[in-house]
Each structure stands twice: as C-alpha cells, then as structure tokens.
Amino acid sequence: MSARYVPVSWNTSKLVYDALLLAAIGLYIGVYLWVAPSFQHATLPLDEYSARMAAFGTCAFFLLTLILCIGPAARLDRRFLPLLYNRRHFGVLTCAVALTHANAAFEWYFSYSPLDPYVALLAGNTSFRQLSGFPFEAFGIFGLGILLLLAATSHDFWLAFLTPRLWKALHMGLYAGYTAVVLHVALGALQTAHNPLLAVVMTLSVVLVASLHVAASRKSALPAEPEDGWIPAGPWDSIPDGRAIVVPIADAEPVAIFRYEGRLSAVTHVCAHQNGPLGEGSVVLGCITCPWHGFQYRLEDGCAPPPYTEKLATYRLKLADGMVLLDPRPNPPGTYVEPLRVA
Image 1: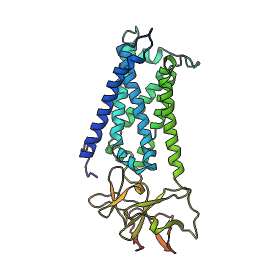
Image 2 (image 1 turned 180 degrees about the horizontal axis):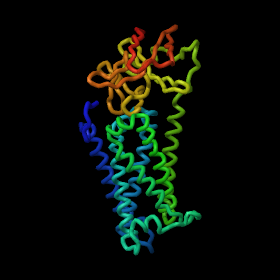
Image 3 (image 1 turned 180 degrees about the vertical axis):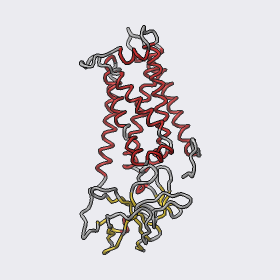
Image 4 (image 1 turned 60 degrees about the vertical axis):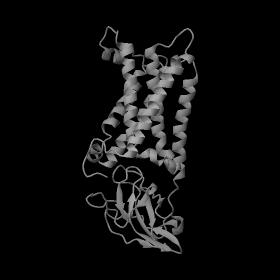
C-alpha cells in the first residue's frame, strides 16, 4: 500500500515479473521472424514488413489471451496467483506490442496512398455489407482503442478518481477488446492465410479463454439457503488457519470468513482497492492481505491499519454444533465485530 501516488512503485517482484515478460516477448518476436519464412507460400515470399506485422500482431493476440486466462486460472489453482499481482504491467506491455503492430501496418499499407493516410485508413474500404473483404481494420482500431484506454487508466490515481466499482467496470471492456481483436484477425489475416496453423491456434486460444471462465464460474457454489436469517457456511475446522472460505450471497457480494489463531472473522470478499478477491488472500501479521496488491485490513473491523483509511463491510458470525453460521446483512464499513472464538 502507498500513501502517495508514484509512477511505479518498484520492488523485486515487479522487476522480475517485467524482466521475464520482456524476455518472453523478445524471444517470441525473434523466433517468429526466424521461423516464419519456412512457412511462407512458395510463390508469395514473406516480405520484411509483413513478417514484422505478423510477429507483433500474433504476439499481442497471445498476450491478450494470457491476460484473460490469468484471472480464472488463479481461481482454479492458487499457484497462478503470483501472475495476478502485476497484471496491469502485463496489460501495458501488451498495449505497446499492439501499437508496434499497428504502426508497422500503417506505414506499410498507407505510406504511398494518394489520400491522407488517416483518411485512407478509415475510408479506403467501405464494404460493410459483405463478409468477404469486410473492413476488418475497424475492429483493429476499436480493439487498440480499448487497450490504450485501459493502459492510460491503469494507474492507482485513476482507480481512486473513478472509484473501484467504476474502474473495474471500465476495465471489463477488455472482453470487448478481445472480441474485436478476434474479429480483426478472422476477417483479415485468416482471409489470406495459406497455412491453417493461424486458424487452429486462434481457435484453440478462444476455446481456452472460454473454458477457463466457465470452469471458474462453476467452482463458485450456489448460495446456501438461510436458516432463520443465518446462512450455514460449513464446519469451522474446514477453514484453514490463516486462510478463508468464500460464502456466496444471493444478490449481494460474497463474504470471506477468515480463521486466525483460533478465531473467525467475516468481511466482504471484495477488496476496497481494486475489487480484488480478498478470500483468496491470507492473514499476514494479523491482517487480511489481498492477493492482488497486498492491501491489508484488520480482521475485527475491516479497517486498513493507520495511516490508511480504506474500510470493508464486516459480518456477524455464530457457532451451532460446530457449524459456522453467517448473518448475510453487512455492517457499515469499519464496524467492529468481536471475532468468534472456536479453539
């Protein structure tokens, strides 16, 4: 957590994360430019500009696919959680790669146009009523616009200025951007491809994203039926020490019930910083620690330790025959609730 805004709050984890990501991007581009000529059509040799466009374009598509896979993968397996911590860095680098692809395409296709290049880009192809030859550039521009918007608003300043709920809603536009990129490739590169490899890889990528999201959504159990206003959350000893279970609530935010040193406390599952999944985090030095960016909150009142001012909604708990019961009605953020002693 930080009490002031800085361009990037660097630490060892972020440096390693970004270094590995940059190395992977560089390796992919290098290998693609080296291997691609062996797959080219004999009568249509691949020129340098086309190879560069394809290298950066496919790289941006795969990076975007990986970004959309990180969230559901982390919910299915905690070992993917470290990839979540600096996912915004991942997104900014993806935007940079996509911009490089767009710049190469713009220079190659419109440098010699008798029209202004920007006019040619928007008005050169108006075949909107037919599938073959459809102006796929429009989808690429839309997808790139989404990436630029998300990269420009990725800093914590915008998160605070827009509020976490609105910021997250804005960044859900990444799915619209991904759809636009898929259509851009399907109506563009795939129409002239002589090798089915791109079509197969793109199809598998889309199926992977969809499958992981479906699997992650099915993992969330349906809300339990309340008993006299209280929801059974399960036996207390099923909650790992220092961890939490997440209880879905009908028409409301899920609740995370943490166990720490023989006591139970319940807070909203949604982090006040970036709506991160608090229930997937752990208790560190007596504070709930969000798995995304390390924001911390006290167990008993959901308040961030001073000098920070973030607060979470808290919930009441009670015990009946070893079963933890949850009152689904949230207390105002920062309300003290005596932890429930179980051992």
